[in-house]
Image (cartoon, rainbow, N blue to C red):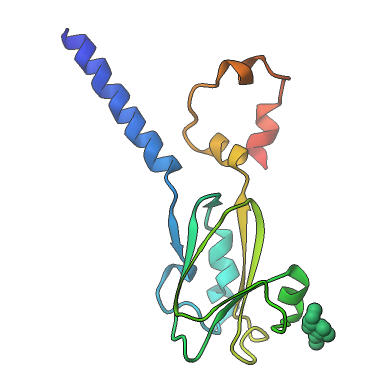
Length: 160
Ligand SMILES: *[C@@H]1O[C@H](CO)[C@@H](O)[C@H](O)[C@H]1NC(C)=O
């Protein structure tokens, strides 16, 4: 009986660890509340921060800024590169912005304040596919369908 409750307890601990890995997270852009501004240097850039951060489907991005002076524009790649603010996909001006990452792949954001994007106030967020993030996190036991499915090379998936 004692060993039964001990194993129950350890599976509960494993389950909680798994939850903490798979839980959707909120990412404050730049990691601090005043980060949505023209960066002071290359090493201070938002892309520098974004490259070190792991974004998963279901996570959210959060921005804090003065909505009377700035905005967040979600744009297409071409408009990100050229800092074209004329046709954003989405415009956020409330200064307390939250964007849920619903799909994997790149998201492009630029500042709507005049001249700011050209000075580097822009960020690319690349969201990993669900499959990929499962391999990095604590993975649950594979389902029978996955075991019987076509052979995959796990090492190549871990490297990317
Ligand atoms: C910005 O994008 C709009 C719409 O796509 C386009 O009409 C315009 O020519 C672009 N401006 C520049 C400077 O590229």
